[in-house]
Every structure is written in C-alpha cells, then in structure tokens.
Figure 1: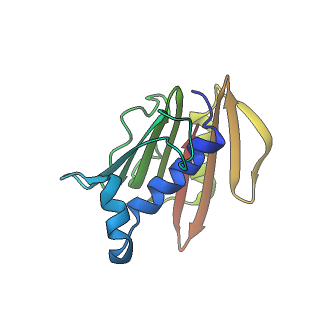
Figure 2: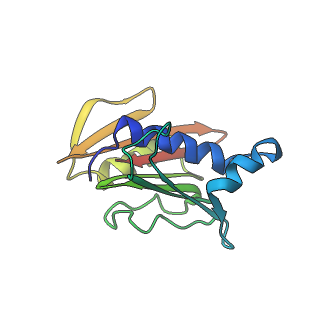
Figure 3: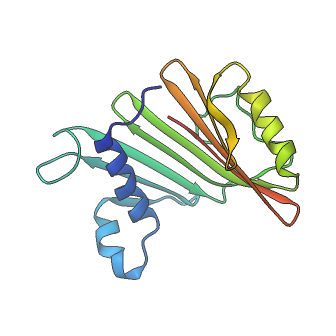
Length: 163
C-alpha cells in the first residue's frame, strides 16, 4: 500500500465531515454522499479547481458504522482480538494509495489486546517506541500500521489504521 498524499488526506477529512454531517450540513453532504441500505456511507470526489487533489483524481471513501464487518481490502492476516465488536471501519482509496481503519472494543484487558496485535503484526518491523501512550507503529514495505489501545472499566477500545 502507498501512503495517502496530503491532498488525499484532506479529501479524507472532507469525506469524514460528510459522513458525520448533521442537518445543518445536510445539503453539502447530499452533493457528494450516498447512504447505503446497510449503513455504509461512501463518497467519491474528483479533484477540480479549488478542490484538494490532482485535477481528475478520484478519492473513494467508504465508512461503515456498527456493521461489525472489516473493509473488503483489509489484510486477511490481521485479525481483530477474539470477541471484538467492530464499531466503525473506513476504507479510502486515492489512485494507488489506500487507507484502512477499524475501531472497536472487546472485553479484555489492554495488555492482552496489545499482545494480540503484537502477534498479528509479527511479520512487520516495529517503528519507534512500542506502546508509548498506548500507541504502536509497525512498517512493512511502503505500508505503515498504527494501533491505539486504551482500557476503561475492564473493556478495551482499539483503533487500527493501515496506510
């Protein structure tokens, strides 16, 4: 996977803005948003004058909230902790760059969830200090994975981002 450019990251923010829109932003969101019957939201935005991105560049974004499903492009070798509830997923594609993220929760202590992800990313190279402030980063080729794990009242929340 290739990392998203700054322009594509800005498009991510635009897609995220639209996905989380409320009634006051509904018209803007309707102009480039489609709400699927399965709860998925997607946006496809082509770069143009005044729009971040290369003219003609297309950014495709899909967000699932509460579906419990991983993005279609999610690497099969990276599993979520057993018993996890996947709360939200995002898949953004811009040219040959892809960003995938999954967030969820599980009734396990944080140290068990961290150990699970260390095993899942065992074939990747650790980058920097592992689990400093609950964050760990691994790299494999051009791909980078960031995992955040936190614990509240015996339940751990996690977010995994691969770009």
